[in-house]
Length: 168
Length: 292
Image 1 (spheres, chains in turn brown, yellow):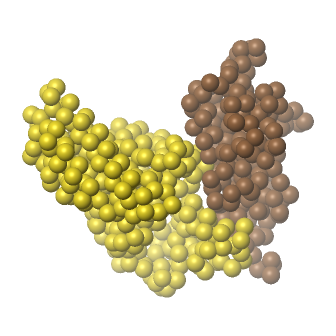
Image 2 (cartoon, helix red, strand yellow):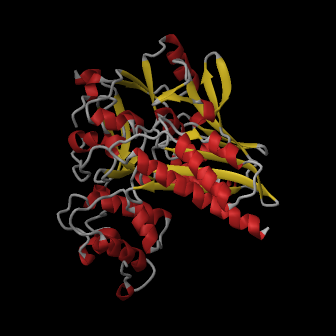
Image 3 (cartoon, each protein chain N blue to C red):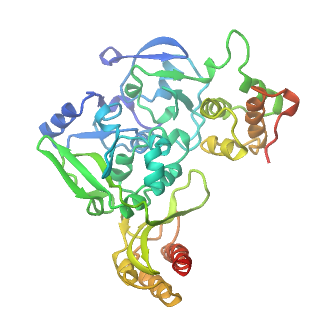
């Protein structure tokens, strides 16, 4: 059956990938099942929880709501692409340092939402961090350490680490 | 994931002409899908009742914001993130920019489209009250041509609209003549982020020597579809904004609103809060009238 599905080409974390998939297969399932990228998680499956967040053509999307055909030709960035050459991304370092991850289910989505936020607004206020991550739910941290992590990563891009901000 | 991706056909012709030709050849057979924030939720739940879907995402004609002196033309597949970033929308139609910021969160705003919000037809649609008080018009397009209707005449019942089976919403037109109007928009939901409205109210009004010269009021979730409140408007036009007028307008809104009880709220709460929102707007007008 799969031989009848179209070939869809997309760039994932800078690498061209081709998959044969039913056009209505969710981008989330293609990432996890066809490409073996299991960072993005399925939480609610209806665009409320953000655990499947990835970036597509520079915008944050819930990959559970994207039919893969609409990702044809797109540049997709997932949590697997954040670390480069064995070096954690500054946001990942900040989550580690500030205790921004506990059980870890929401973390890939949080990191991608935070990446999107800092790409558009390198020095957000706490209110802007809250809005940027409003679509990402966490059941463990109470969010404060996640907000601390994002503010800390933003601060470290221009200021010494000891001035890391704290969420209020 | 309870849906089966293999049970649905999806094609992406990439041009408006091809999509319209498909819709004309087989009326009712194809379901248009834009950013998928409604249909993909139904798909995941296994309740997507559409065997054949045609993608509108990525068709350039449908994702442009054109600025003429008299009007703004917003393509139906403009996502809400584009509306939030657009300087003309922010300057001339601030209520629409604000409503765009209410749509879910960032990852929803990047995909949910303004046309999709209208065609989906939820009584609680976030963008609808703002579009109604800006006198929005819709361009409906098919192989037969384009017709333009007031948005206020688009919804015809709960989740029903006047689109023919071969038609799409191509664009929303907004007349640029609200710069001098006092504008109001407020949504009441369970929480600030990600919540669907229990009730929302929008208003645009023009005062002259303390008298209401023009007023438009529109509500979400006070009827089976987003709607203007013509009876309440009629009570206000031509009158100075006094305490007695505000009381009378509240009473009219309580009679005019026809909300329902559902999982998000009750009819009586919706009416009561709707009247409170109206009073909040009218008190602003009253202060403005007293000052000037």
